[in-house]
Structure formats: C-alpha cells, structure tokens
Length: 360
Image 1 (cartoon, rainbow, N blue to C red):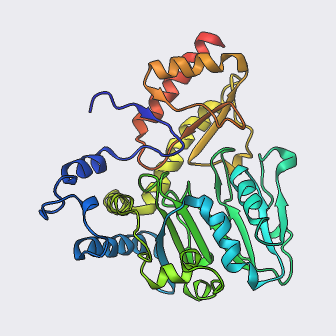
Image 2: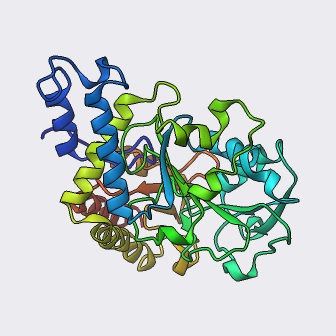
C-alpha cells in the first residue's frame, strides 16, 4: 500500500497491514450480524465468543497453564503500578521494587504512595545501562512481592533471566510480551499494555496465578480488585470492546506467522541488523551492556549531537518516522515490535549508512 511510512513509534505502534485491512473490511458489518463489533453489547453472544477465542489464543501462544487467570483490563500498565501494591502488599512486611529504567522508576513512585517498599536493585549510578543479575538483588525476608519491568523501552535495556524469587514476582512486559519465548510458570503475575505488540491503546493483559489472584485485597472496591475482574471473566464493567477485538486479530496473526518462537527469531534478526551497524561505527553509539540490549527498542546517539535534528528531518523525508528518543534521555530510538517488517529495518540501515557518509 502506498504512503505507508516506516513507523518506528514506541507506542501506540505499527500494526500489520493484514490486520488493519481485516478490521477495515469488518468495521461496518462484523461476520454478517448487520452492525459493527463496536456497536454491540459485550454481553452479546457474538462478543462473548470473540472474547473466549482471544483468551484461548493467548493461552496457546504462551502455553499458559490452566492454573493461571487471563484477564483483560483497562487503564494501561500505569494503573497496574498502583493496583498491584493495593491488592498484594498486605501479603508481606515490604514490597521489593527494582529500579532499572524509567518505567520501573514510575512504578516505584506510584507504589510508594501505597505501601512500604525496598529498592532491591538500582541502575541509577550507571545511567540504566546495565542490570545486576537477579541473584544479586537485595530481596527482603517476609516481603510480599518483587516487581520489575522486563524491557525498558526508554533506555533500550532488558532483563534476560527468568525470576526465581521466594516472594511473588510481578513483571511488566508491556513492550516485550509476544516478542520472546518465556516460561509463564516461572512468573506469578505478568502484565502488558496492548499498544506495543497486540493492538491499539486502551487494553491491558494480565496473566497471573489463580491462587495469587484469590489473595486480592478484599477491602478494596470491586473495580480495583483482580479477583473481581477474574470472577466476571474480564467483564465486571464494560470493557474496551474494540481493543479486545483487535487484540484477538493480533493473536490470530501471531499463530498464522509461526507463533512466539518465530517472533523471537525475527526480533533478534531485526535488532541485530541495527546493533551490528552501530557497533561497527564510531559515528553512532549504543551505551547498553551488550548482553542486556533490548530486541524491541534500539537506542543510539550520534557522535555529534548537533546533527540530531538533521538526522530526524532527513529520515522523515525518506519515510522513516518517530525515531526521536524519549524526551527524558534524548538521542534516537527505533522501536521494532513484531509487526515491523525487515524492509523497514533495511531502509533505516541504508539511511544511517548514507547519513554517516554525508556527515561523518
């Protein structure tokens, strides 16, 4: 399709053209029901079937055990920063939070309003460019939980290990879920907002052990309790029906494209193209520990920061958009989630090579 840019946005992010075309074709009349999917009740059998199929696809893609709940919520990952300690901090004397990037720091700020917490590890001193091994984190005895963000989109760094903590593990996978193989049984609570890898903004996926969900704080209003949402099959209140519908399309697309194993292979290939270019150049620089580099968000700076505006303007003229780094750190960032094709990566590589020749 003409006029489609190379979309490197960190989120809301690019979606597969096939999925967008399906949504377009079905928007006025979904499966012959005579109305759009966004015009019918979430209690209608048509939508209930859609919701059931979406959950089944998540379970198949990630091999989610039956002992886990799959919940579709609203409020983004940011709401989870508050809901998690509100629901589960009572299970111990303190809550452990890892400070390993901007989103981890935001979670800490919100949780500190709700409970006593312990910063079990911090990467502030190295400017979030490396993360200690999980075995070296200072996890307090009699604590309720350990929380961290697996892939920090702003710093382009990720935790490569799976948790093995005594307290419950709560992991923000907003930007990496569905892009790499994980063993769900190693995690107690996983959450992810949709707008990176599985649809438009406005819906959040929670995958958590049933026995943990059952320990939700009973003193909270129902809308804030995970067990209440699980009991009502994610329909305690009117859900984001459009977001849920598109998420289901994305899950079907993943299954069609070879599942999560194939997504991980492609993520490593795509990010590897850019990292190889950056590492072979003195013009571009990536500060992150090589073993912990994100395969979803490639950050880099230019040797001469004064060239940043020219880089962005000339990239835009080539249809390479949304490459500006987060306002808090500057530089450049190429977010390369699952729907992004290798063609876009190669177009960016070619531009970067030519830009270096021109200004290096």
